[in-house]
Image (cartoon, rainbow, N blue to C red):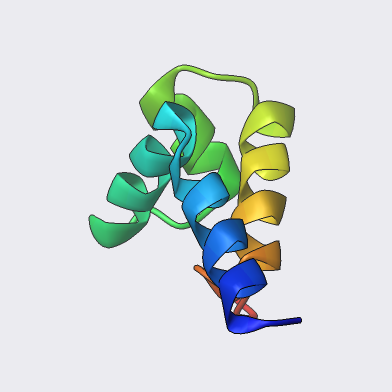
Length: 65
């Protein structure tokens, strides 16, 4: 994957309002998908979908709890 493709993937991932809100939650220390869903008043499955996009773009990393 070229640098341009990586940059495009990152920009597409953060171009979504919901994903930016999720990143704000993570920055506040809320990292559990269920807790993020509760904070943002959204379904957990929706949050998990957005988290997968952020993971695929290497914006966040999954760490064992």
